[in-house]
Image (cartoon, one colour):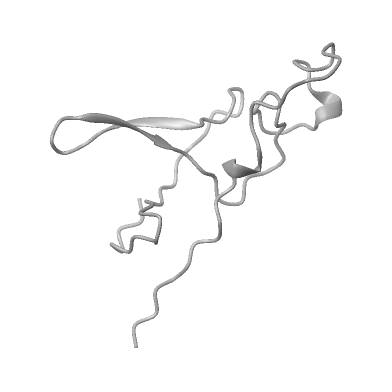
Amino acid sequence: MDSSGVMGFNKSVRMMVQIDVRNPLMKQMKLKLRNGIEEYFNVKYEKPPLYVFYCGKIGHGIKDCDECRDVEEPMNKYEAWLKASPWMKRINI
């Protein structure tokens, strides 16, 4: 987790995590807050590698996707919103 204490305009928190690439990317994450309340937060990925918008899995393209190969017109479950905007560094003047 980025411990700089800098929160962006959209109140985001930056974390480094390990991802099991056999599973689809997560769209939301459930976190337990200090007051004990559990909330869901949207997840965005900084510099994500190649992934398929249909299955959400990393490491292959649409032509190699086993899940949507037999689907005539696959509907995307994932979109470009999953990609985070670049993290801005705070400059102290």
